[in-house]
Length: 197
Image 1 (cartoon, helix red, strand yellow):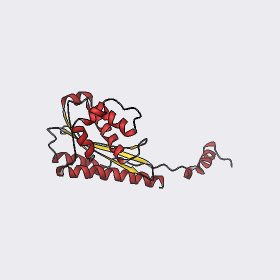
Image 2: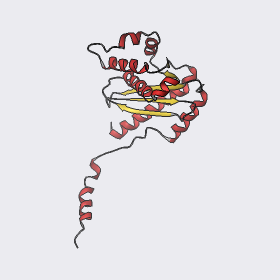
Image 3: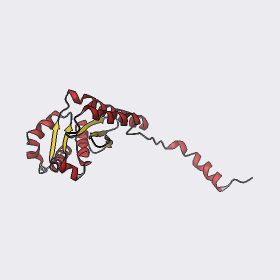
Image 4: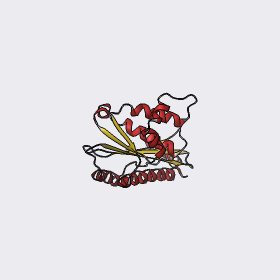
């Protein structure tokens, strides 16, 4: 009895099946969606839109992960996490998260609303608020490092906002900061496990 073409093709492909490992790492779980939406209730979100950012660096993977959660009164919570390349530290991953979070805001909303960016990078907060960041990085310096480029991108992007406040997390922000840190840690761990490292 001869095999059909499809059966022969299945037999040939079956030997290849275990050679390629592909894993799906969910960036958002249903529990995280519910928790993020409940976190809006703890903020005066009717006054401003809050963007919480975070970044992690994994030495074994030689990759970083950048993420943010946006809490606004009239919209569901938006949460994004992405694996990043071309960076070398958690500091740069968090800078990328800031740029991604601010870039996600529509231009019309940038001009009409008030925004609060919450980051754990205290030196960045200080330099932004005393305008030394804008003074130094409005123009890209010669021989710019990757951090310099991220600073420059942030300065140009922040100029498109009518009202942007950059601050460090206060005690009232602890739940939101823990949320983003836990989310990024979960994703980088799942990604590491899927890669077998």
